[in-house]
Length: 154
Image 1 (cartoon, helix red, strand yellow):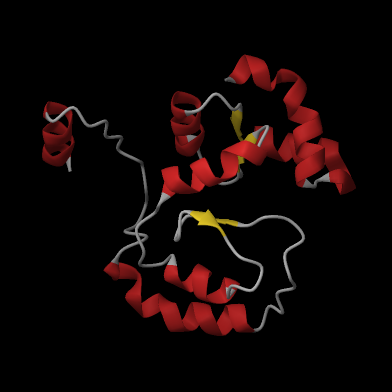
Image 2 (cartoon, one colour):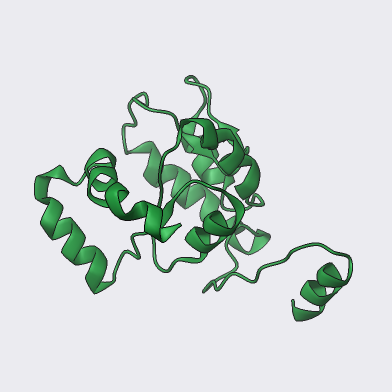
């Protein structure tokens, strides 16, 4: 990977190594498709009340698209992060990275003018924020809690 990154740099292409624990979004995940499809099939998804942006397709999903199929496809599909970000920018005033670490927040901060924060789920800071929000732990509550300071985070 370091050779690929060096070659990209020589060609004038920005490349960022993302710290990951497994080969997600690759053929190494092929055996996980059917078990995931089976579990997701029991979830009883309801129509989305807000836009769902897919990094599989790099766009906002249509209301009638199969969410289970998109979630299963992401196991093997390349991540279309920047097209997904571009499709969300016009309607986004704050990006919240929900997961461990802050790699995507770093990319968003470098590549957009929209504030981005990492929830760093699993950290003491995230646990404290969710305790503070209590039952108000919705995306809107997170935005209200963070947006006053988000300008200093960008």
